[in-house]
Image (cartoon, rainbow, N blue to C red; front, side, top):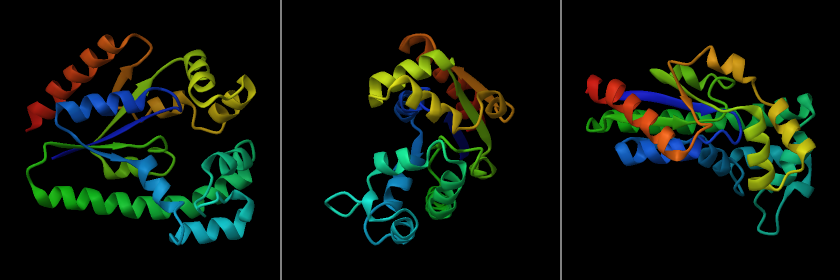
Length: 201
């Protein structure tokens, strides 16, 4: 079983590529889903986050409002580091457990770890290859404004809070250009799958 780390900046199109890989037969571990589990009531990080950031980050159902928390920490390096130090260890343990379970099953060709912070959290050490989704900054900003209803300044702050694409590309085993249409992206991903996954299996 080959372990692939899929990463890229915010609004680079990782989810689209993840869906293509799932269609080709990969098992997907979505780091964002694992992070959401950390924000559920009574999860260990949930209690620590309330202690650190206050009850104003809670929704009516007592889960943590990601948007409120995000607005509170982005642009403030110290708060962002604190948030990451609370959430990341929990997420990493969950991911390690899922990878171990899939390895034991023995009938899986590839597991794809879809993680925006693959490099920053050292999750790249858990995978065999790193596939980086590449897209220009202008496209990312326009996608963020359209998708998440950010204004331009908020979108730029989100990008600034992340690792630069230049730094991310240093870790890449493969690069997927996602500035073109879906067909172009699908062709690249299918070719990579055939060359890397099918060949190894």
